[in-house]
Figure 1 (tube, rainbow, N blue to C red):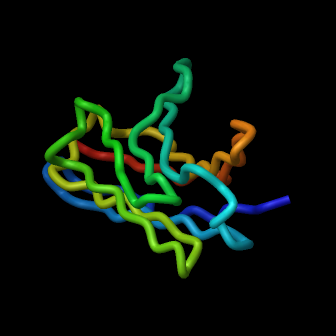
Figure 2 (spheres, helix red, strand yellow):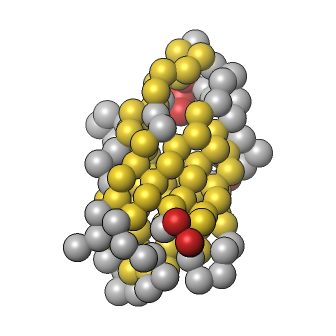
Length: 117
């Protein structure tokens, strides 16, 4: 089973930036999407951004457009999330995900992002 290693979280002040990285343990060319969800305590996971592996298109949720950018590198089986102008409400655990052609989702272990005011 594919494994995902996500990293790059940390503590940053409001207005700062972080870059999250996620690398898969095998080639992602047979998968459809790779990206990031986030989860805050007591809440469901919500989609933040996704990268379409077969055509390179990207999606960023409306509330994060202009601040977050997702990119992928199929040669490295990796996806990245550049987060700028961070706000305290961005504080959450961010989970990398990989979705296959059968809509099965594989998860990374999560990386904590904390934005102080």
